[in-house]
Length: 582
Image 1: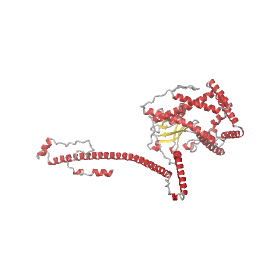
Image 2 (image 1 turned 180 degrees about the vertical axis):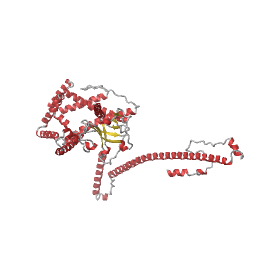
Image 3 (image 1 turned 60 degrees about the vertical axis):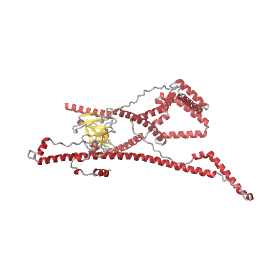
Image 4 (image 1 turned 120 degrees about the vertical axis):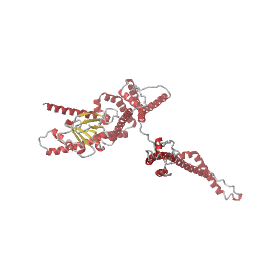
């Protein structure tokens, strides 16, 4: 591209060779449609008289200066025109390159389609060759009538040919009858199809969530109806269902009953699809107001819409993950005392199925399920304390941990071990006059070490009970210009007299921040990004040592942290004021 432009730039005379503007072309190329009119400066009558009259005030030197000035102006105009020509030529060739690239992409797609058609043609040719070969083998050879003298000698060969013709006819009949089915079992290479992923769109995300809600509505309605039957929402409906179910189980008609209910449900759905208005539900349906979709949304409305949909998706996926993790942990012996109950129950069911007839086992299971569903669950739901003591499935499910709970337990166990070892070592070397509060403050530790050692504080300074584990946030120091010093991720602690920020990236204490609560001049809630909806997730703290307030942003528990810091700040300031008055 650059070589082509250089050739175009220097394919004519150089600009120094053009003596006058009139000799240069008016347009750069046929592609340049905008002509720049260039007007030559006309000399005034006074100047012409001065040039004509050698005895006038203007001399030949002045005339030469005027000519040089006009020539420099012409050179400047020619230079501007040259730059314009180059810019237009670059635009023209860039458009050509873009058009060629588009044609190449189309040709690539056509080439791929052509390769596919060639592969299909080769496969069809192979199939045709196989079919022709099979037909040529099936066609019997026409036996020639031998002469009378050779009839007796060719009896053996005739019988062979007749047997070959019979086998060919059998093969032909078999191929005509079952050849299509045999071709279905022919192995073919799998085609790897790559699904195109759609770009992220707020409208598409909202529509998919609504589709998921509509698709899950029949399942949720079915679960609500079962819960209403178990809760005896409608006494008559639950009594009839309980009586019918127990009679069906007693007489061995439980499976036919469920199949008949499925057929009845499909029949009702067919009538509803044909236009019949059939609405039967134990729980009355509440019509939800459908909000009309807005076409023109502002940036804040779109962002709020995405946040709402993301929150719903987060909660839904969290519930599904909790259920799957609990099931996994139940079968992986994460809680041995819970899995042991399931293990014993499976062994009991296995032995019962081995030694008792299936009719008796089915009757026992069906009766227990009916009594549990209609009677026991009703009592347990009305009496929560009784359920917490005697409902074994409920107790097992509630006590099953998820993976985040297991991680929290493991972290708590490690911290307890560290605290016990440190306390044992301290008891062996500590003096006898220390109190419990001093002991706890001395050995309160963060993830990187003891609290007072990290922030260079006294041993009695320890985090408050509200923020014992700290609040995760990011420190925004707007006095700094470097990106590494401008934003730091870490944990914020509040003690009796200090506000401590521990950086998470660096192990040195230089990146940590300690602010004395008595030095704070102003504290208020802060919104880091004004574009986002809501009141924000930050706290701004002003001190005399900083020109701009320090901002602790991205705090999930912003309100709790603000109340804690503000109450401690008011407590210290009031104590200082009362001390000054005294």
